[in-house]
Image 1: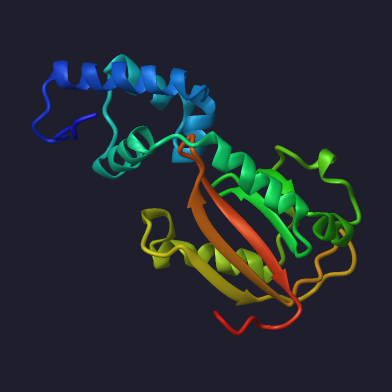
Image 2 (image 1 turned 180 degrees about the horizontal axis):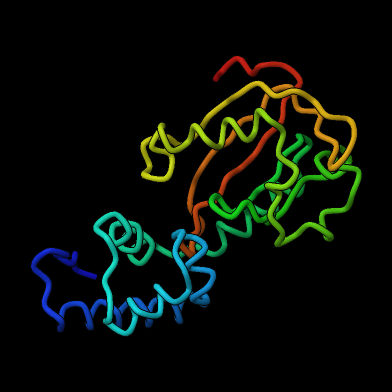
Length: 197
């Protein structure tokens, strides 16, 4: 996929980009709504891009370009999920923007006092502590979604009651991409501040 010059693009350029986007999305088995969630736009916007009626902003285009040209390695994705599930640490993996749970370790499920089957695919945002919410707000200033930062460590206050038990005194977020282009966040909890961060 050749870079699209947003400012000097012709209607044909935009239509070709839309065709390539649609083909890639179908090959990657990503629904329009899923791609919209990843990019923080509406499903209708994705549809307009694919039909050539509208083009993405330069920033959105760069994200799409990265996603569409990244080598797909689904085995690596399965290995990551397997390692998370088998981890002895309190760890879980979520989609970076939507906070939807992809998988979690048994120690994390014991902390939550619930099996992750009832949470898979759901946003965990409603369970955020004040510190988690503040750390999330700070990501914009760090350039988190633009790739300028890929990890953050912050102190957290434990919560023993509802809506979900959280015992982490420190939380580490690490951001990376899955083979289908989704940005994900590995969340690891610690009882004490880790020395390497």
